[in-house]
Amino acid sequence: MWEAFDPEGRANVRAELHRPAGVGRNAKPFDMNVVADLLGISACYERLPLPMTDVQGQIQITPDEFVVANVAAAIAMRSGRLMEW
Image (cartoon, rainbow, N blue to C red):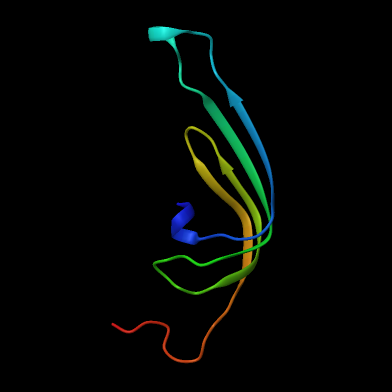
């Protein structure tokens, strides 16, 4: 995912890691919750190469979902065709 967007810039990130009790064969995997508040980053999705700037919003990652909330960005358009088929 990271490589697909090649993000650059600042974000406030909060991460919670919780590992339930257990050792050896009884060890349980970590539960992970991450919230990233995007603070005007830049990015460019590799499959649609339109550079985005001033990307703001929030990304939430849990073991069960990946949520993108209230994200807005400026897209740098170049003259010419958007795509050729």
